[in-house]
Image (cartoon, rainbow, N blue to C red; front, top):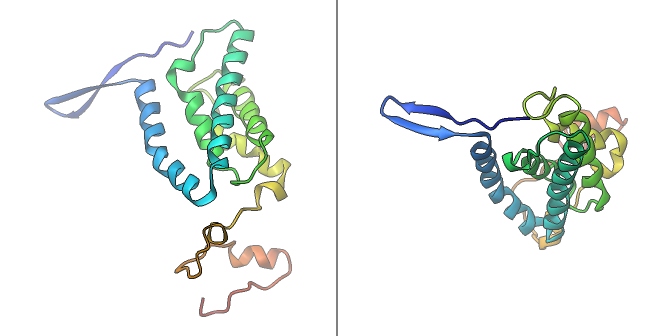
Length: 179
């Protein structure tokens, strides 16, 4: 099984801090909470539902796979939670409930567990879950506009696809050269 070992992290010659996989994953989760709160503010409560489905699915697939293969339970290291959190943050805010479930299955089972678990995967599992982009390109590239949702009349910045993406489809960008 996988052992979570604690190694001293020497920050300065006189300081020692014990760091484990769990503590690092918890730091990532805490760091993502502000972005999650902003996503809820901009896009609504469905974002939290998607996040719960994504995190829950990642944990379920990791537990199920490891139970099926008679390996030790690794839910305590929180890496499946981080994968679920990062995966949900790559999804459109109005995605259906099944989208994070499918992404979690691929991210945890194929990308992470088939290659030996935490630290042995060939790419970041949450990034692997983005295979949804190749499978469902329209669904994954259609986003809700937070300005319309919040009734913001004037914005000082707007993000959009680069001009090259318009040229790829044989169209000119809607912005003029001054923008």
